[in-house]
Image 1 (cartoon, rainbow over the protein chains, first blue to last red):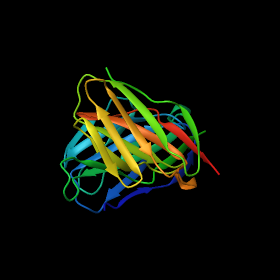
Image 2 (image 1 turned 180 degrees about the vertical axis):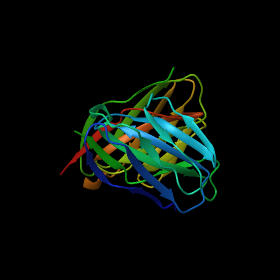
Image 3 (image 1 turned 135 degrees about the vertical axis):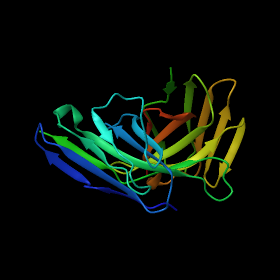
Image 4 (image 1 turned 180 degrees about the horizontal axis):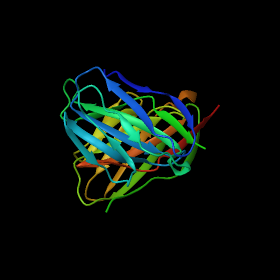
Length: 116
Length: 107
């Protein structure tokens, strides 16, 4: 089973601030993802990475950026937070379990961000 | 484009059986996932289907018909802890999620 960590779990911050949401996994998975989810709504993919030095934008236009300097670490940065960024941010990594012929995404606990 | 439809809400009684449907229209298909998400928590993996037919895993089963663009998740012997949102997601390149079906299990 994967272990994936996100910090902070909750964050309230003022408009215009720069913030970094941390995501780390300890299983050496190459593929990692960031999703945004508003309450009762679908998850939207905002960034993903296939490995070190690989980053791609997802389907949802986002003003955030990501980096992947180390396999286990995939931070997401908002240069200037706005109230429209208020949401839950979920990090995930994917792995192929024993006997599986597919990659399963395993999610972290999420960061609930409020921008005032 | 990608379009995934699920009912918004369903209610069922403890001990009963419930079927949650998912229809999809996507530009490609490499499999369909079902995830469970309790309020305020992260989604957790339930099932994966890539071939037509039924996959059974304990109280949960998932069915896929690729020709109809249709899947369902079947939950048997419902328990109170099954109250959650159930997310259908289609894989083509990356995962595209439906908005989820909020299931409430009543005593």
